[in-house]
Image 1: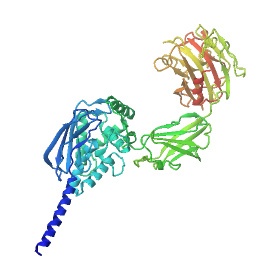
Image 2: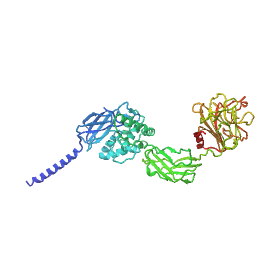
Image 3: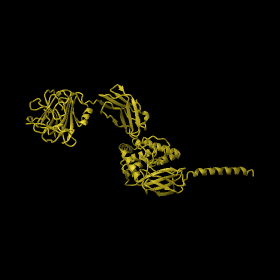
Image 4: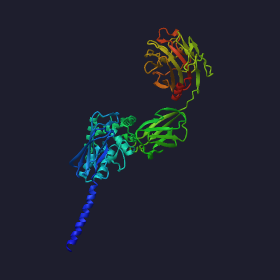
Length: 590
């Protein structure tokens, strides 16, 4: 009996151990399985196969078939799952978030899931991309399932330059829920989709899976370029609107995660827009400089060392930085007012980085100019043409109208402009400025009633030039370069589509800035000359009178004609107007 007692003890011990192992094994089994299938959401009736796998990921021969039971991609089975792993295989039509339409053919997605206390697994692009890599790491690298899954997930996110904690679980991601992890799924789903048809998407998914299976690295340059191009060209506003409409149409209330912050992660950090823009003009007193990026910025790198705003070449501006993570916008609020007539520079170093730790590949630099806006400063003559041609500045440069008729002005007031369409109609102006000076400006509003295919309509010219009959011409209208030749040094403005139109008011401004001529129409630069005597826009010293249109006595034998239309608000400055002032002239009209 004494000999039997130790044996009984051993039987009891192994029996307890066996019971304990049975309890642990029972944790591998589940009484059912449910989840959602998403690319965008799979539609109702999509096929779902749950295939049971053993510890070596080999099919046991037992599988269950079902279909999605709503347009949300939902599926559910209540069969007991008596295996440690399952593979969920799906095939169906889905909502394409890029096109906003249901796919025209079916797509297959997969998911590998270890049975544990949870009876829920989703199926999506990321579970599909990671499945084979997880199995390879377990079978060939000696990792357990949990470690293999963490590594495979990190490798795939690295391909898209997305960093996220190890606790992310591809099987529990859901594009219809808020949160950064769900935003990542939606972003990668849209990047892979791009402008692809379903067949192309399926091909890329297959090649992607095969490429990363053994080393976790995407080597296929064609696929990388495809993902890069998709990322660069996706319209994220349309994507969000398409998804919102889809969920509304299927009576689902969802929160779409901020996927926009991850869509551009593959791209180098870039500036989408900067305000003021490169070489833009603005009025002094600007209180905010805005820099829009293509992807989220690491707030810790937004510093005065990494974004430097300077005045001229020596003075660095102090100020406050404010970051808007939704717009990828960095605002700089200068501590001092930006002064006029100055050039400012924005320098951004590669140390400014996105949340993915990618920065600029080299230093970025942008210039912009501050301008004053004083339309009375050095205004030599102003002719509002309100019933007469007097100089409203009081400087005494009164002009005269010959054969003109006062008519409705640009502001709609009667006798507020002058029509020069009558034979010999023109405006004679004293020598307000010397055309040979390096800096001066001329501005005129015109409303053309009738164009000419044969003749040039003159907007600013000398009364007499180097000969009695052929003056120098500074600004004229024409359907072609009919006035070109040795006697012509001015600017031609055409008409028609996209140019000056008849029966509408247009502001034309000629600016000579350091002997370089600029012509603006409606506040926008349309022509610029070179600073040489042989090029258009270089004018010689002149002390005679100027004319708008042409008197009839000078028409004979030359391709010039009386202006067929009205003029208003003629101005002369003995300085070069800056672009801001020209635009302000256009806005205020009078």
